[in-house]
Length: 219
Image 1 (cartoon, one colour):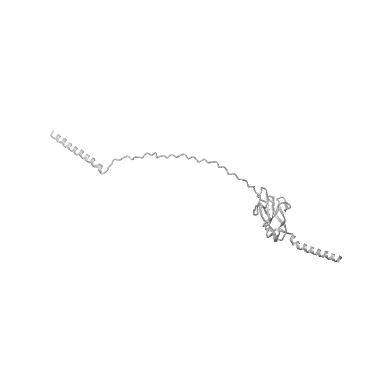
Image 2: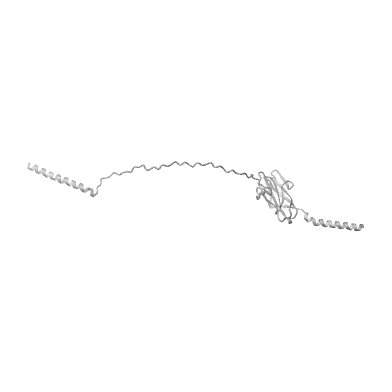
């Protein structure tokens, strides 16, 4: 009786060990690093990708950091947590998603994690705990802080007065035409009468002179 019970316990323990062993790979966790080419960087210096489902933005005084685990979630797994270290300008700050804020999103094709932090931080390094296996994860995009969009009122254009153009009177030239003094015409046609008159005077004078001499002789 005892021998049979002992054997039954041994078989149960063996089956339990085998079952736990087969489940181990499925629940195994792996810690991986961020792609070294993604750090160090500020949010403003990285590729911008504001997404309302991943932190939204841009926000007036906060940067949004978005991490991505490339590959098929069935093989590479999903984010369990992401721990990132930043230079705040007054020392280093380490945050863990989702423990210290942010959210892990697993329904957007690949596993993603995002967090909002004060503007101006510099990402120095990051690690992630994932449920599968992968070589690294990446900083896929940021949404740097910026002024919130506000409706811009259309400027009211003040009517611009058309320049008053004084009518320019058209002045006619006031110069009186200059008349050249008419000179006596001296053409051949005008000299013939003058010559004829002069000849008559000469003939008449000669006749008078002859008559005067005859009277003088007769007297």
